[in-house]
Length: 333
Image (cartoon, rainbow, N blue to C red):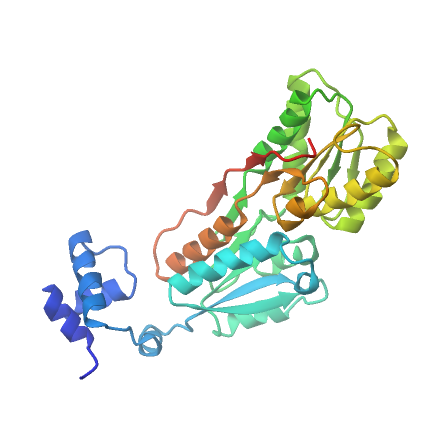
């Protein structure tokens, strides 16, 4: 039996070849009734888009770059970037576009921008971490659409797309949970001071404590790793040995903090309540499991992918997508 063509789909759906082609290419401006008919008959006929030919006709590469820090390639399974990467890959797969992994580090000033100028990809999704913040300036004038998962500290350019969680509200939720648990000497392990997310979480925490008439406890900085959380927790205990609560602005730092608290003979949550941020695998693997502020990480990755693909197709896309956080209560509160 001959393989069905787009003409067969168009005839069965009762539309023109051009309309069928636009629907199957993912256009969003086709009449919904026609769109449903084309998709239904394409499925009934077993029609498969000749993606390579479509790419050649459109002058596109048919691929989107996924930029992440080199050090994350060997990190603990289930950390921040893993879920974002999964969501982005799902979004690109649904759009019939190939993801291309582009690891970068602080020494890599020109390779990623040069690759984006080469025409090898139609756009990029940057999973922003402290190690690759230098790319913000380098990609400001990118010739292809760029979506940032995580708000860059600098302006990423008028054409950039930013996908982030509501970090300020997440800080508010963490502080409120600790206050509601009866805690009053509350310290914080925040992230690098040049990361917008860290500052927003800290500001939300500070403002919520103020609303309850509670002075913020000591503030120390980490870099969103287990070891930095452990070192920060040791500094917190030096500054205020009577701390009864800690908000760690990532689950990895919370895990490091938990280790130090337990080594110091401080029971969690008996003596000290502990709240993390992210809701990655280590939160449930900890003993006790961590109460944490969940970022919708997979949804953030998928949103970035869908936004980039829409921009590649020439559609109007909002420059900012802020997704809500949720407090997940476990046994460390």
